[in-house]
Image 1 (tube, helix red, strand yellow):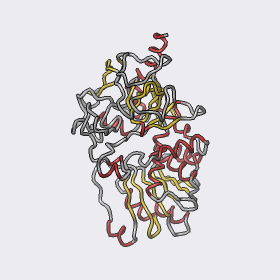
Image 2 (cartoon, helix red, strand yellow):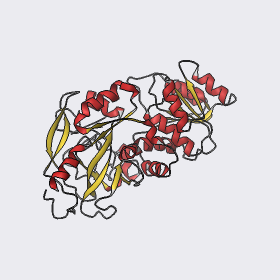
Image 3 (cartoon, one colour):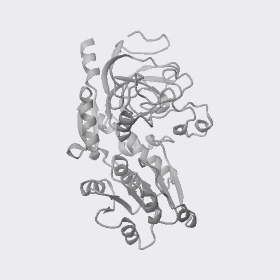
Image 4 (spheres, helix red, strand yellow):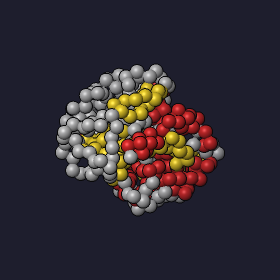
Length: 387
């Protein structure tokens, strides 16, 4: 296609006029359509999407809408394409971009923020005050791909240069889609203080974020790392990723087990990734006095919290959104150096045209699916046709 004059392209990476993309209609309704390929603006690039992982938040958006927000409201029937955990190849450079070259393999953060509001200027771009207000007109700068702007269940997507992370050639496309998940875990530990070497950590909930949370905590030097959950096979995977101890909460009281493993003292940090109704209260009782809780998951309904216990014991509670403070760069560095094997949580791969089936595997945990990755075949077919 013909891009604007200030957009750089390369003949080795032909760009079509239109692309295949899944769009969200009514709740739960995805349709494969043709969409115009977007052009990058200042400080943006066009990424050819090579692979995208399915996140539980994608399932929530497709079925219920929030936390996606398009034009200030629900994302339904607005020609919106979800999907946010993707990687790919840079194929076009917007005005002023010299940090990346055409042909670079990259993985992406979700949030760019507007860069102008109070929170963005504080570096808290995942808390941008202009979240979800400018779909289709992003001149203000705000982007949260797959949440407030078009995401990765398509052939191409626009990304701010602030959201890109170079991917090592030693990393497969599938592994590269997991950098965002590891980045969320890294962000949680960053907010708890970052320097966790020698400190004790509980990670509750062995979903993708929890499993990589255990891996990141161990890579940062935490000891012991304790993983709690309900499924023995997930807990065993946690051991392979670095957990020193695992606790099946169906078989024993997790608070008593954590206290026993720490000589009655409790741990320094809890990273809560389960979203269970009593998770915050249990986390508080696992901690020693002055400990910290990071909430990386959210319950589906409001839950009671024993605030008096938190206050009496000087316990700090932090909520995180996504993978802020450039945590994905640190996560990619750990994965590049093989400090842990994130590929253990990748269980299934589908072609992009089979996205509905991939979503079913992820939602229903078919064959104990953990991370389901979708490979983009459409772009490969178009490249062959262009040749």
